[in-house]
Amino acid sequence: MKRYLLKLTEGSTLTREESHEIMIGITNQKYNEYQIAALLMAIQMRGVTVDEMLGLRDGLLETGKYINLDDYETLDIVGTGGDGKNTFNISTCSAFVIAGAGYKVSKHGNGGSTSVSGASNVLQGHGVKFTDSADTMRRSLDEAGICYFHAPLFAYGMKFVGPARKSLGVPTCFNLLGPLVNPCRPKFSLHGTANQTQLRLYTNIHQQIGDIYGVITSYDGYDEISLTSGFKLSTNLFEKVYTPIEMGFDYVKPRDIYGGATEAEAMKIFDAVLQGTATRSQTNVILANSACGISIINPNLSIEESVAQARESLESGRALNALKKFVEINQ
Image (cartoon, rainbow, N blue to C red; front, side, top):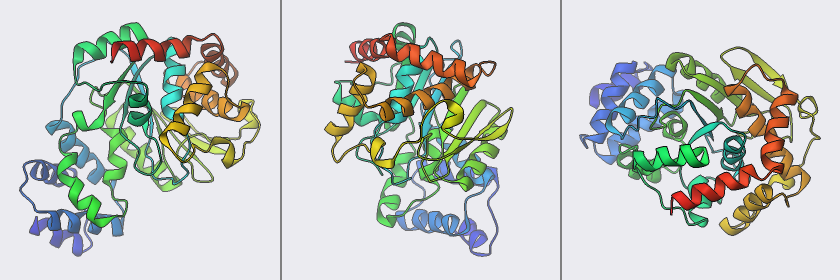
C-alpha cells in the first residue's frame, strides 16, 4: 500500500491493474483501516479516474459471487445515490413497471444510505427475504419478470472497506461502484448519476465494459429523471438533453416526489403508484423512468411508444402483479 500512497501523493493516478490489485488486497485484509482511509481520501481529493473505477470493479467482481443469467437479456435500473434529494423508491418502482411490460429486470440494490428508503428497505417492507440462490433468481425472472440482488450477499469486498468509509463520513469512489457490480453482468443498464461529472465518468466506464447502457442525470441534481428539470441521457447511440414536455409530461416540484420522513411513508407512495392511487406527479415520474429503461432495451421505440408501454403495464395491473408474484417467490 505504501507504494500506491506515494504514487497518489505525487499526483499520479493508478492503473486499472494497480486498482484491481488494491481491491484484492483489501478483500484479503492486507491493509488496515488507516491505510484504506488514506487511499480513499487521496483519490477523492483528486477525483477518481475511469481506470481506477474499472480496476476496483474488477476486484469486487472477482472476489464476489457471480450469478450466471446469460440466457436472459436483463436490464438493471439503479442510481448512484448521494443526490441528497430523498425521493421515494423511483428506480425500484420503475423496475416492476418494466417487468410488467414484458421485459426482464435484474435489479441490484441495497438499503438506503443517503435517503430514508433504499431498494432493499422497500422490498423488506413487503416481506421479501433476500437470497443468493441462482434457482430463485431464475424462477423470479421466469414468473415475475424480475429478480433482485441484495448487494451485501454478493460484493464481499465491500464490507472490508466499510469501517474506513464510515470513519471518513464523506462520499468516496466506493459510493459510485455499487451500480457497476451487478452480480449477473446484465446486458442492459440504466444508471442514474447525481451530476454531469459522474455522468461523463459512467459513460466512459460503460464504453469500456461494452454493455448496452443509458446514463442519466437531471440538471438540478437528481440521479434519475425527476421531471423537476430537463435531463441528459447518454447511451451507446447518442447523447441528448430532454425536457419533461418532450416526454409528454408536465414539470413537477421537488415536494411532489419527496419520499417522506420514514420508510413507511416511502413504501406507501411506492404501493400507491403500482395500485394506481398515487398523485399524477408521482405516477408520471415512474412512467418517465420506466419508459427510459424500456428504450434502452428496445431503442427502435419512439418516446411515445416507450411511455405507452410503461403506462399500459401500470394501468393494466401487470406491474402490480409482477410485484405480488416476486414477493410470493421471495418470502
